[in-house]
Length: 300
Image (cartoon, rainbow, N blue to C red):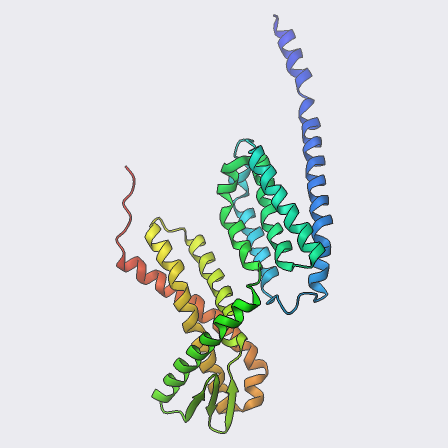
């Protein structure tokens, strides 16, 4: 073959790339259209308050963080070879579609939210296989924190948690000399009485703080598996201490500034303090673990 023939062959092969790109854009548009058709009604019901009793208000933030986690690793994901896991894709997609349809028909909000986790997993398996799923597994796992805990479980566990938080908070205030007492989850300080509710010391609050702690652990990405595991487990007592700080703060605000201050803007601000305190405690615990645990050996 002469050089002209080779050049001609290459020239003929060149225009194929735009056609392939066009097909890719069509496939992407179909996927996006399908996702919108499925989940716009869900988000509409959500915004209309159809599940206001079950949701806690942090779910959209969790979804946004999960999307950012995927975007953060997009180059690594796109660089993977296209090796679809067809059987796994079929099974996971069927599970996602089943959860969505059953949740939509029966009005079970948790099933619809589970489909939000399963459907992206099926898409990744379809295009990038198991390697792609391993790349973004934490983002999909993080989406579990959008699923509200069963109300019966919340009621069962929240009661003892509120009692424990109230008891520790009152004991701390008594140690520094405040005129404070407690009857169950009702705190009396001076002429005021405060009821420790679910928002101040409930299981859902602990649930959100655990999500924040796990996100911090993932972003730090320590080489020590033991350090990561211990940090994830220690988020639970950290969240408990943060709840104690919030209850103590609200009690002191009410005692010094009155009931209106305790139930007004400063009540919401105490919720922000809760998350800031939890974050500071998680960072402190992480630093302590870094000092106590031996440094991982580098692979030779």
